Each structure stands twice: as C-alpha cells, then as structure tokens.
Amino acid sequence: MLTWLQVIAVVGLLVAGAVAGIIAGVLVSRKNSSSSSASSSSSNSSSSSSDPSNFDKDENLHVSFYGIAYTPAGSQLDANCGNSLDDIIKDVQLLSQITTRVRLYGADCNQSALVLEAIVQTKVDLTVWLGNYISATDAGEAYERQRDTIKEVIQTYGTDHIGGITVGNEFMLNYVESQGTDDVTGTVGTTGANMLITNITDTRSMLSDLSVDLPVGTADAGAYFNEALLSEVDYGMANVHPWFGDVSIDDAATWTWSFFQENDVSISDEVSNTPTMYIAETGWPTKSSDTDSESNGASDASEANLQIFLDDFVCQANANGTEYFFFEFFDEEWKDETYGGVEGWWGLFNSDRTLKNVTIPTCD
Ligand SMILES: *[C@@H]1O[C@H](CO)[C@@H](O)[C@H](O)[C@H]1NC(C)=O
Ligand SMILES: *[C@@H]1O[C@H](CO)[C@@H](O)[C@H](O)[C@H]1NC(C)=O
Ligand SMILES: *[C@@H]1O[C@H](CO)[C@@H](O)[C@H](O)[C@H]1NC(C)=O
Ligand SMILES: *[C@@H]1O[C@H](CO)[C@@H](O)[C@H](O)[C@H]1NC(C)=O
Ligand SMILES: *[C@@H]1O[C@H](CO)[C@@H](O)[C@H](O)[C@H]1NC(C)=O
Image 1 (cartoon, rainbow, N blue to C red):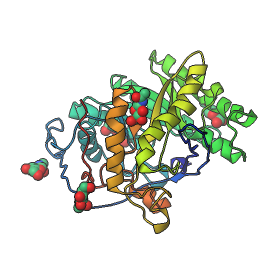
Image 2: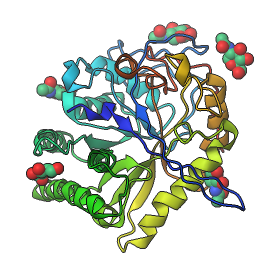
Image 3: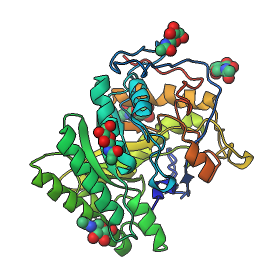
Image 4: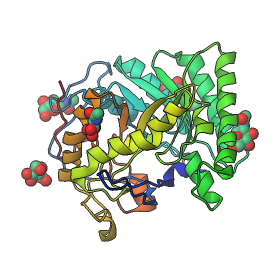
C-alpha cells in the first residue's frame, strides 16, 4: 500500500490571542514531486569522483536545520523503485551541508541501506531515523517486509548512524478517518493505537533479539496523537503544517510552535514515559500545479514565502530547543504526477538538486 502518498493531515487551526482557540480541521492531501527548474543557486556535488567523501561544498549551504525530511527519488515499491546509490550519495552530500539529521518514511526499495551506505562512503556526520511505512489493511504484510529489511540493515551497518526506528506514518490519521471519525481519544483511537502498538512492540523484540538499543517511535498528523499511543513509544513525530492550517505566512512560525506545544508536547507531558516529541514535518510549498491550490486562502505558495518561513522559524526553533525535521529536502516528481496541487513542491532543492531561490539561514 502506497499510503505515504495519501498524506492527509488534519490540522487544527489555533488562533493565538486573548479570545479563543478555534479548531478547524483541514484535510490535507499531500503528495509530491516535480521537475522543476528555476533556481538561482548552483549546488553541484561530484559524486562521480572516485571518492564520494571528497566533494565540493556549496558556500550557499549552512548546517542550520535541526533535521530534514527526506525521501530518496525512486523509493516507491508500487512505482517499481528506481533509486540508486549514486543519486543518494549526491543527496547525502547536499544534506550533510544543511543538517546532521534526516528522517526517512519507509524502508522499501532498499532505501535504508542505500542511505547508510552513502553516509559511510561520504564520511559525513549524518544520523538517520529509519522508517517503516505500515498499512492498517494488509494484515501486517508491509510492516513485516520492512521490519525484516531494517533488521538486515542493522546487522550490516550497526547503529552508529541510526537515531531511531519510526513505525508508522500517519497510521492513526488514516485509521481513524477510515472509521468515519476524527475522535482520536475515543474507542476508535484506542483501537488504532493498539494495532500500531502491536507492531511497535514487535520492532522492540526484533531489536532486543539483536541486542540493540534504539529508540522506537511513530510519526503522525499533529492532531492525531493520544495517550494510549504515546505511553508506548520513545518518541513521537508530529506533522505541523501552517499551509494546511490556512495560516498566513506572517503567522506561520508562531502558529507552528504553538500548535505543536498544545497538541503534541502537552500529551507527552501527561504520560509517565514522556516520549521525546519532534515536529516530523513543517515547511511551505513554493508553487502549485493548478491554480486552485496556489493559495491556502491566506498566503501563496511561493519561494518568497518559503523564505519568510525559513527566516522566522529555523534559527528561532533551534534556539528554543524545538526539534523538527524541515519538510523537505527536494521536490518529488511522483507526488506531483499523482496528486498535483502543491504536493510535489515542498523542497528546499528542486528535483534536479539545485537550490531554490532561497537563502539558507545562518544561525549562531
Ligand atoms: C561545481 O561548480 C563550480 C562553480 O560553479 C565549478 O568550479 C566546479 O568545477 C563544479 N564541480 C563539479 C564537480 O561539477
Ligand atoms: C542495498 O544497498 C546496499 C548498499 O548499496 C547494497 O550493498 C545491497 O546489495 C543492496 N541490496 C539490494 C537487494 O539491492
Ligand atoms: C502488525 O500490525 C497489524 C495490524 O495493523 C497486524 O495485523 C499484524 O499482525 C502485526 N504484525 C506484527 C508482527 O506485529
Ligand atoms: C520558539 O521558536 C518558535 C519558532 O520560531 C517561536 O514561534 C516560539 O515563539 C519560540 N518559543 C519560545 C518560548 O521562545
Ligand atoms: C529570487 O528571490 C529574490 C528575493 O525574493 C527576488 O528578488 C528575485 O527576483 C528572485 N529571482 C528569481 C529568478 O525568481
């Protein structure tokens, strides 16, 4: 099941202010992709050189992001994969110039091994949170396939460059919605959490069999965590998208932080294991493939607005200890082809790995 395509994020709209918090559910469907052009900054990397650890650094790039959300091109099993070590080495050379952490969404198409191999060959300082993209409707097939892959990868590469294993991406959102509700704290939410916890517990057993100690967590829409789930994970990663909350660009950074505190960090604080909470995704799209989606009602998808979000969010979040994975490394063509709209246009880089017309912030 190719669900990550159907990233539907329901985002509560939080209006900060003296008056009241309004919760507006916004269904978001995120996909990706693109082949774009338009870039003003050149980011070439020479992975063709015989030594991938010897590559040109781009003076426009700075290690300013806590983390980056990353899906290597050609990593969809349903679309016959197609990724390659050479391409992923190019990605890793660029990623290492903007962050020390990346998160993956799934383990199909050998992406976990390819990313770890690229880290080894480039000798960069990069930690990866591996992903197991599971389905609620396949009796555990996708889960088990990826679990076995992740196990092999740990046996091959060890844990030096692994930050954790993320079991599930928007599992709760998809499950709860499929049951015709949005009440994640009710019976349906508890049932969904228990299904997911079954696989989380199984992953812990797999790690324990290897005598390996790694954090195990899950990633979901920011409004879809509950205590049942968070009490069983080492970390939760929450998507928090001002674009899908119909927030104006000028309020985007503040809204993101407040939403995350009120919907995610607050639940973690309620459970005794107090799992680490990360923002799994936040960002701003730079264009739309159709006119209807050019604006979220308050602001446009544009490089200028991505720049504002970068300037307002990144260094401030670093300074106050907010742990986030910026969405995302580069535009994803398959998402644009599959979903249109803004789905394929969230990258800091274009799909050809040239930097978009933005200035990467330099934080102290
Ligand atoms: C990268 O770009 C710079 C200047 O744009 C150029 O001097 C250098 O040769 C390029 N390196 C590769 C490997 O293409
Ligand atoms: C997966 O990638 C690793 C690293 O490049 C490689 O050693 C391994 O053979 C690949 N496995 C498959 C099944 O392609
Ligand atoms: C994984 O979870 C699914 C339910 O979502 C379940 O059917 C399957 O048996 C589980 N597999 C393992 C090994 O935990
Ligand atoms: C933390 O950073 C965010 C993101 O820029 C900002 O909106 C928020 O106000 C900051 N919080 C604190 C307590 O400084
Ligand atoms: C790049 O961004 C700058 C600043 O927003 C803008 O002035 C310029 O026109 C943009 N260039 C292109 C080619 O879009």
